[in-house]
Every structure is written in C-alpha cells, then in structure tokens.
Amino acid sequence: MGALSVWVKASRPKTLPAALAPVAVGTCLAAGPANTFKPLVLIATIIGALFIQIGTNLSNDYEDARRGADTEDRLGPVRVTAGGLVPPKYVLYATWIAFGIAALAGVYLVIEAGWQLILIGAASIVAGVLYTGGPRPYGYVGLGEVFVFLFFGVVAVTGSYFVQTTVFAWEAVAVSIPVGLLACSLLMVNNIRDIDTDRRAGKKTLAVRLGREKMRTVFSATILLAFVLVPIVWLATGLTAWMNLALVAIPLWPPLARTVRERTDGAALNKALGESARLELVFCVLLSIGLLLA
Image 1 (cartoon, rainbow, N blue to C red):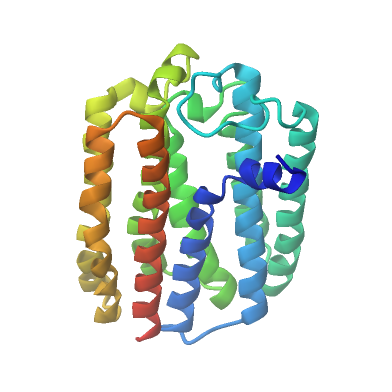
Image 2 (cartoon, rainbow, N blue to C red):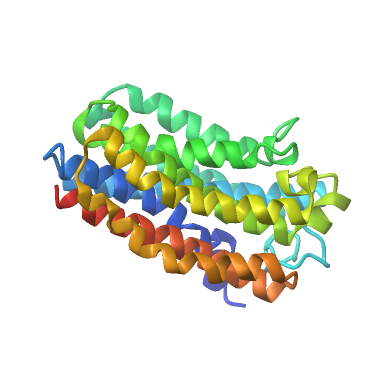
C-alpha cells in the first residue's frame, strides 16, 4: 500500500461523518433560528472536529494494538499498527500531530467565541485519548457509548452552536440528543462485529457485557429512538416544523437493522458500519436543512 492510502486507512474515513454531522446541525441551528453565521468560524470548527476524530482513531489504533485487542482474526479492516503497516511510534506521533492541528483551530475559536472553548476542546481531546489509553480506558469497561453520545452529540452540537452565537441554548442540547444517539450506532456496529476478539482481549465493551443478541436489540432501538425524538424535540422547543424533514431518512433504518441482526461476517458488518455513518449523515443533513428553513 502507498503511504497516503495507509494513513487514509488509519484515519478510518467511515467514522468521519460522526465528526461533521453535529457541526452541521449546530451551525444550521445558529444560522436558521438564531440568524447568525460566521463562515471562518465554521471552517475552524470543521478542522477541529475532524482532527479530534482522526486523533482519537489513531490513538485507538495504537492503544488497541498495544493491549492486544486488534489481532489477526479480527473481522474489521486491518489496523495499521497491529497489521505492521506503520511502526507504533509513528502512529503515536501522528496522533499528537492530529490533536495539535485541532488545538490550533481551537485557538482561533477561543479568540472568536471565548475562553469556554478551551474547556470544550481540552475535554474532547482528553476523552479521545482515554477512550483506549491511560491506566483505565473507559472504552474497555463498557462506557464508550456514553462518551460518544456526549462528545459526538451534546458537546459537538452545542459547541458548534456556541462558537457561532457565543450563547449556550437548551434548544441546542435538545437537538443534540438524536444526533448523539445516531453517533452511538456507529460504535455499536463496531463493537458487535468485534465482540469475540474484544472478549478474548478483556475489552469489556457494552456489547461484550450485554451479549450479541441484546446488543443487536439495543442498536436497533437506539436508531429508532433518534427518529422518535425528532417530533418530540420540535414540540418541546418550538423550533421550526421543518426539522421533521430528518424523518425522511427512516427508510435507511430497516435494512441496516436487518443486516446487524442477521449477519456475523466481517464483510457485512463492515458495510453496516458505513451504512450507519451514511444514516447519521443523511439524518443530520436533512435536519440541518430543516433548521435553515426556519
């Protein structure tokens, strides 16, 4: 493999919509109902979000290989550290370069929006590192979905809204909940696929704790709940009815749920991971368009 393709693989591009989607929702909530839009702030927010996600993915690649969670018999794509494609120290260097780029974008956002962004950015980077790193990584004790919900849902949407408006609004928190649930679905597919190798490595993900069948049910219910919450959030917040445009993405849910329920092979579940990312992206694009029509 060429050097560029190796690093693209290491960045895990199928997961990047989870970084971009909440930024779109938070920004459009500001541009629509709040009538505030700062294009340079949006660019910096996208850079920060993308490189926090990439840094998290690289850190996960490095730490899972070090802890023995990524083995030759895993069903997912080959990881660059465990697969010997890149020496571990270079993956570690790349991790901190990615977080460094995110921090540079954050400096501009702090100047534009205020010191609160230091706390948000620092917490996001620390959460990315401690997912599989540190003395007690939370991804190894079944808390991965909690942190994904918080940082790729609540924090990402409300933070993207804040940098545009310099205001924290409960409407942004409400809108972030279905976004966070769909972000969790990506991690759930990943952990359902890797349940056997994770169990052997002592990685007690929520899927390992609940078992494959229960986790499949939780996965489907999580996506369904995200859709159910859209009209509830609309009624509770008084935001534009156009936000219900996100419900148009519902047809993407049944075939995805069926694949995760019926298949155990890596090829099908790797495809399901991409389809989960697509579902979140389509949902958030439609939600964003609806918010802009306010």
